[in-house]
Length: 385
Image (cartoon, rainbow, N blue to C red):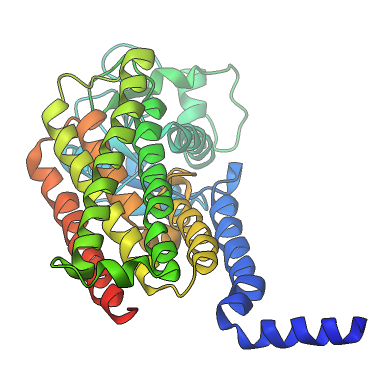
């Protein structure tokens, strides 16, 4: 008898392709994704995208730039070919994590006196504190490794043979000035980031839980009876869609009210951009959830696979780990998730302080996602009758 039950369960599992995928394929995929993300996010292994502008264009600055480009923790963009304005744009637009400008009007790279502007400008984004810290360390390391003769001369006040020890310690902090691509704020950048990141993830979770009722009602036969009415099954889908959108907007509103009242996120000034972004994000989440559950054959399938899918999508899209900490390949894959576009839109509003021109692309992507999801929901709901 024991053997019979064992064989029966084995045959049931073998015939259920969805169960096979859930049992043996998805766990491996889930592990691989998180392993890649957290390997990329672990301490010294992080590779920073660095944009460099060498305005001095001297032999010394050239050696310094070459050392930065060759460093294993640096993924160089431009290798010194950009202007200072281009470097700032690259950092602000998330094409680079950090920027370095070797100033034409600054002190010489060997001048530690502190008189005049520091020769190295570190261009940073407030949301990327970890890459900024990494670059600070790399800059100092490369400087003392590649410009030993300059350091010795600065320490001794007179030319000394290359390789000779510096007679006195030098204050390297005088060589760097850090500037930000956005105005300083009393609000920690991580607060604004995770308000959008958490909102994106829970929009998907709540929409999935609400949309699963479509499968439950189909299994109970309720959809069959409603479909004979004047609105047909389309009325059921549209009604659920409208409810999920309203629910999502309320949910995100509560999150950002807490961020505003409790942490000082400037919701009032940015209310118009925030409202449009929230409505489109809720619409995309609702449509995606309905489209997904309409394809599923059972409540259990929709609940199980859907939950795992939301977690994976949220991880890839930056809701769990900031995307700038991820390897380049994972960052690129993340753009297929709604989370990445929602976070990008909220980022443009709250910490990059950009206008509707920058928001047009994420709005368009999310709106197209909503249209595709709702279309799938209508088509498959009719097929499942």
